[in-house]
Amino acid sequence: MKPKMMMKIIVDVGMTVLLLLLMTYELIGQEVHEWLGVGMFVLLLLHHVLNKAWEQNVLKGRYSAVRILQTGLVIGVLLAMMGSMISGVILSRYVFSALPIRGGRSFARSLHMVCAYGGFVLMSLHLGFHWVVMMGPINKYIKKQSVIHKWLWRIVAVIIAGYGIFAFVKRDIGSYMFLKNQFVFFDFEEPLILFLLDYVSIMGLFVFISHYSVAGLRQIQKKKVTGKI
Image 1: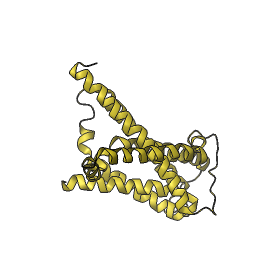
Image 2 (image 1 turned 90 degrees about the vertical axis):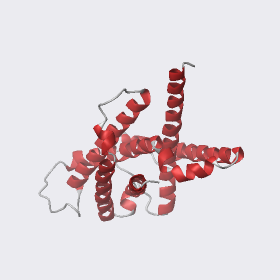
Image 3 (image 1 turned 135 degrees about the vertical axis):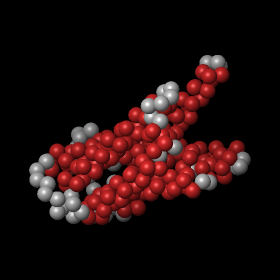
């Protein structure tokens, strides 16, 4: 694997880990949450530097259904990330507390909630687009296995996605995304690992949806090109 591709994977894995940790918020403390947010911002900048070739070509070429969906997700993720970071600076009590920011905290709190939970879903969908690339070495290992083993991996994916639906409802993610609930509930007696496992499964749900939706769209495009549809 080329060094640049390896760096891309490392950055993407780092962003995925930080995203999950950022969702713990009160469970790890606001100061740690703020520093993790700074780390996410740094990785986001590095991610865009490493993918500048894609950005330079965004207005070139033909737009297929897959490319439209991918570009829309990139824009959505970028807006959510910027919204989270700007509102995070306004709400900061530690890292950016010295900045002369006055007012706007009520709006910033609502913006932060929408961008945090909406961004979590969008980033998970975006991750599903690039799942094959991120899991490159593991995919090569899976391809060498028998048909039975491949189906076992798929069954595991279905189980994770299925539990992700339950966890999505259990954690009330939808109400936070659309501000139906203005305050996020945290059970401080719950082990952190259980909280993270639920969010990993929710992420897995949207990775599953995105990955297989894109695979289906690409198959349809391929059939159109070959004249079989």
